[in-house]
Image (cartoon, rainbow, N blue to C red; front, side, top):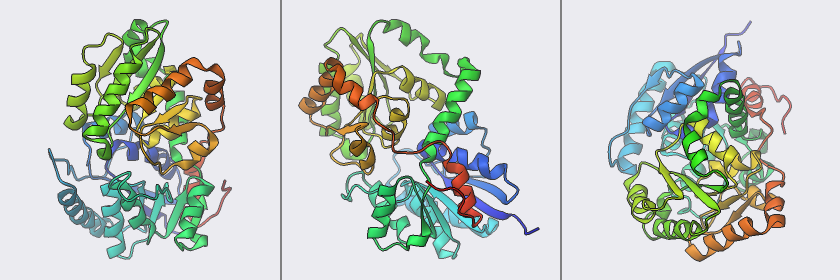
Length: 379
């Protein structure tokens, strides 16, 4: 029997951890692989929450997070430190996911050593290098040399083919975020205490429709963030809604939201949620307002409409399917579209019942088969 393939999975943020733990679980359970994990800890606290819930123990923790770190300093440190791990581990494959600075640095470090890169969630494109920033360029960089591109949807695959990526290296696998959501939902069913921390807010907002809000994108800092805060304040002038808003740790978000919304009884500004509690928020909300990428994939899996507070999205499949709508960051547009979903039952139903195009919960197994050189049953 051939020696198992050594796979080094590299990531650094909470969203990456959520989307990679199903694959790590699959690799750990598969005798075809010797699975190793390296985290940059580009995010620290929020990343650790996911690792704990998912029972993932990193083999290498670079602990690169420093307050106020610049993108160039983080990139340089990540490139050097991940390179040291690669020299130590000498893996057969490096796996990265998505579009963070850790993804780009980890992939380049592997390329410098001629180690093939598997890019999970490959092919997402907004068409604007500054939205999302710097993620759009991070994705394009990795897409230019990865050996295996695991595209979540046919649209993502087509985007790569338009960039002349070799067709036989691009495979539609679905998005592992759906695997993760199914996993954590089962865990909560088995142990409701995992997501019981929102109970007091749920009681406080009993009889009201809950709107979940997340906002953290760099390109929205400043005027965009203030406009989002203003829109939320206008929306909650209604007495039939309550807002649950896990506020990102970045002061560019936190200071604005606290100043605009901190005095409102029907707005709960809370600390960032661990993964089970965020899944619970998706479950109890009526709709989501977000500038996040992952929420555009997760909320539709639970039948919740998503209003995307960005000018562009690298996930156009949700917009095309009707599960998401781009509303930008102008207060009037956000308020208008939110009110429409609150007041027009048919419009709400159209979005809530739309088909989720992002996967079926079996993506991790497909990716493992591709790493082993087997096509398996692709989407």
